[in-house]
Image (cartoon, rainbow, N blue to C red):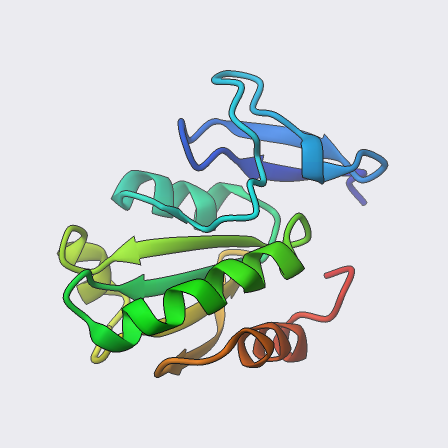
Amino acid sequence: MTQENLVVCTKCGVVNRLPFSRNGADAKCGKCGALLFSGLPQDVDAANFDRQIGRGSLPVVVDVWAPWCGPCKMMAPAYEAAAKALEPHMRLIKLNSDKEQAIAARLGIRGIPTLILFHHQHEVARISGAMGTSQIVNWVRNHIPAGN
C-alpha cells in the first residue's frame, strides 16, 4: 500500500507526491510553487481535467458550470465553502462547459450545474442542480467516506 497521495497541481498540471504524514494544507507544487490546496476550487482546462482524473489519487469533485448560468453563479460560494471543508482530502475543481465543450460532451452533461465525483479514475456519483454547502459536503462524504 502506498504511503502517499498523488496530487495534480491545478496551475501547471504536474503530479506531486504528498506523504500521508504531511499536512497537505500548506503543500506547494514542486514545479511552479503554487499551493496544492488553496481552499478555492480552480477552473481547469481539458488537459488539466484529464490529469486530475487520470493521475491524481485523491477523489475529485468536478463542478460543471457556465458563466451565463444563474444557478451556477448562485452555487459558486457554496462550492467554495465546500472546498474549504473537504480539502486537502479531496480535490475540488471547476469545468467551464462553454470553454471545454468536448469534455462536457464526453461527460454527457445535460444540465448545469452538475457535480461529478471521481475516485480511482472512475465516476462514483453525479448530481445536477444548485446545492448549498452542507448539501455538497454531505453528498461527497456519503459517496467517499473520510480517509478515502
